[in-house]
Image (cartoon, rainbow, N blue to C red; front, side):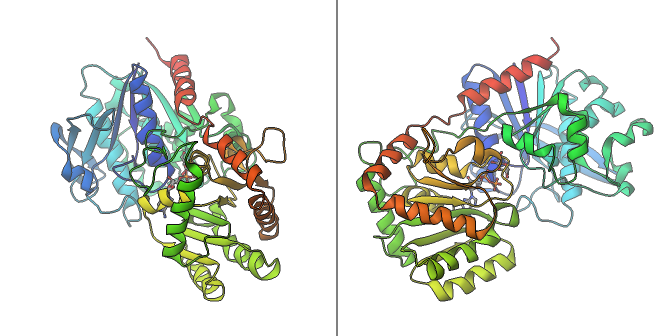
Length: 473
Ligand code: ADP
Ligand code: GLC
């Protein structure tokens, strides 16, 4: 089987969140399983693009409405990532420092999708499946089926994976003319709720679509940021496949970002040493349980609840506990965390920004990882925490529900709470603190979670089964 993944992010080249981790890992597992897996992504102005060896495989140009854009497609020649990597370089649009957040993001990703299809149109031998990820690439199934110039691509199966339906990439109908020509009576396939909605168009036009956990799929039938009716209508094409993690990158026994590596035999002392270093760095008492949070500081992740969770735990409940946060996002949340810190500096610290190496040290050196998410399509953090012997405290939602069972239930190992509210999270914190004081039980749980298998093997097999059900041979 030959699979072409098209994505805006891919680890380690350009990462904003879990999308990158998935696109950097799944193709590797597909490649190892004997398939041809290729990834095509934008050539942002990244270190990776400048430091690795690439060959030019295609040069072209395309119109976006009235603007002409020249583009180059580069292939990484050493297969350093374990799959074929192609990067599309569009000067003036994609050669940016960041992945998203520009005034012309719509133009950037529209042009990217058109350039990729123009290039694919020229291939002698086409892939069996084109697998697109999230709204940035979700117009591709529509264009492959309906744009006149891509007629040759019509029989290639398309799969869309929804990593996060909160972001849909909507833009106005006044830009309809920017899409490569098609019968205008098909335009309805692009629309949802008065605008062109790339994610909705992907759901309508992809041959199959997936969500990144089964529970998230179930939730989307009743809560999908406005797409509920469409989800119900297209139910027959949907399947929830739980993400895996790259167990080679995320392995406490070999992780080069950790000051000390550890395994089942050495975790007690190693985790204690890493925690000690973290606590010294962030001015916290290493004797207390350390509860951390890593992620985007946005409402979806319940980040706005963190100041109240920390304040209540320390002042109302008088918990003997430390909190450490790493993340960036909503200015208002950042400001309230700064205010909270002024009052609770002995028990709480926060590092604003994005720091991959620090995140690894926090996964390893913490006792618990808190995820009070309102929406969590899958969540990778809890799986990284498990592998690093750190107990997840999660709200029962989406992928968190599919990966964490409560230690109060038979065979359970984590801490779950139901409501995305501070009082409920505080009760979970209370349970964590009590668990921390029972060393034998705590270490038993750590041994269990470090042995759980969250590798991509089973998810990769599920994707292959899905492709086989649609590929035309
Ligand atoms: P999402 O994609 O919704 O942000 P996920 O749980 O799927 O959530 O993935 C988040 C990924 O981004 C994880 O690999 C996590 O470690 C990483 N991450 C998030 N915020 C930061 C940060 N501030 N610094 C380093 N890594 C981060
Ligand atoms: C999204 C989701 C997250 C998921 C990730 C990878 O960013 O918010 O829950 O883990 O994609 O699929």
